[in-house]
Structure formats: structure tokens, C-alpha cells
Amino acid sequence: MRIDVAFTPAGLGASDLTGRTVFVIDTLRATTTICTALANGARGVIPVESIDEAMRLTQTLERKEVLLTGERHSVRVDGFDLGNSPLEMTGPVVQGKTLVMTTTNGTKAVLATTGASSVYLASAVNLATVGEVARAAAATTEGFLVLCAGRSGAFALEDAYTAGRLILESLGGRRHRKGLNDAALVSVDLARRYGTRWLRPLFLSAAGRELREKGFQEDVVEAASESRYAVLPVYADRRISLQGVPAVATSS
Ligand code: MLT
Image 1 (tube, rainbow, N blue to C red):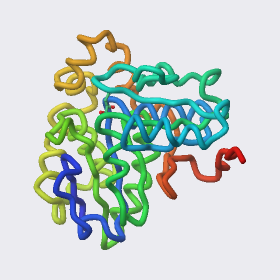
Image 2 (cartoon, rainbow, N blue to C red):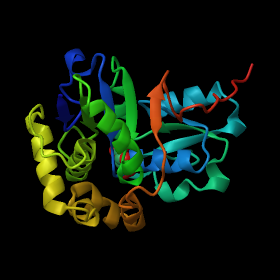
Image 3 (spheres, protein in one colour):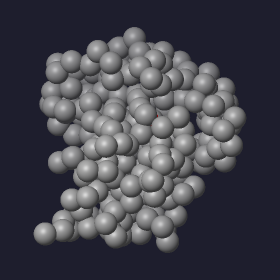
């Protein structure tokens, strides 16, 4: 068994990803927001790198079926339909829609998984569900990689803590540590330090403090709602969806 954590996508090489199961984490807030949108009926999320790309792609899709979504510096991009708050992703807003989404770190991390055999999105809100998949992956020789989005190329406490919680789920109470890389060991230590108190690391983190300062305190509380949704977002063919959900119609 091999369990690796990457605290940011920077420096990831093909050998880290090729043929592996990858769990992407951006607890504050992209993976939390995506889980919430899919749980509330969104058809899918298309992650893109830039604001321009989001706008260009949206022009090729049925506009009424698409929500332009994302943030820069935590706030909704001018001209976008939605920002990056899980609280915006209510059923009446997202039901049946495809979100074209760009965020500062989270969507970039998803896009950095090229070569992986399977890519899942993880956060507190779907921990139990994604934890089952991690447990199955931990039983294989290849194990899995947890890719933290981090923050502008640097370590993010909330993602590392979430990674540790996911690894503990995958181990199912076993104290096995062989096969964990150093970042995975540190993540597990963080998970042990904070236990199940999500709000501690989330509010202590730089991202959590910034979100609080900008008036998004409730998003942090929402992001701490462990296993609220039994959803398993999968990234494949450039789209994040729940398995079995059909693709959006393109305009002719
Ligand atoms: C990101 O992708 O960088 C974050 O989700 C930023 C945010 O919370 O707005």
C-alpha cells in the first residue's frame, strides 16, 4: 500500500499521477462548493483555468443551462452568475445546470490531475462517502494520492487536515503507517491533533481567516459539516459529475 499526499499541485510529476487514484481537496472552498452543487442537483461542473476560458466555453453551451461560477480573491468574478460559496448552491439555483467554474486554487488542482486513472473530489461534506472509496484504494498495491489545492502554491492547513481525516477513514482504524509519505504522515498527525473538531483548523487557517474577514464566516461553518452529503464527485473527460448524470446539451 502506498498513500501519498501532495500539499500543493506544484512539483507533481507524471510518475506521481500516472495510473493512480487521486483525491483532490480544496476544503475552503472549491471542493466543498462543488459537492454541494452536485448534491443539490447540478448536472455537472466544468473546471477551467481562467476567467477568459470560462467565458469562451460558456458561449459554446446553451446559456440557459449554464452558470458561470467562480472567484478571484474569494469574491465572485464580475459578470459571473455565482461565486464560490457553498451557500449559493441551492437546489432552485443549480438544479439541472452545468457550472463552468474557475477558482484561484481548487479548479487548478483538479486540472492538474492529468494521467491519473481516477479522480475524486473530497471535502468534509462528503467525507464518509469518499472515505469508502479511499478505503478500497488503500487495499490496492498502488494505494492513492491526495492532492491538496493549497493556497497560491503554498501549504494550507485546512486541506492538510482534511487529507489526514481522509487517510484515517481509508485505514479504518488500523494504525498502519508503512507506505505513507512524509506529507501523509504530517496530515495524519494534524487529524489526530484536531480530532473531529473541523472548525478549529478551518478557522485557524489563513484561508479561513480571510473568508471570515470578507464576510464568508458561514461558508467556513458550512465547510465543516462532516458527511452532510453522500456524494462522490468524479472528474473525467474534463467534467466533474456524479456517476451516471448525462452531459449538458451543446448549442448547434
Ligand atoms: C480556491 O479555489 O482558491 C478557493 O476555493 C478560494 C475561495 O475559497 O474562494
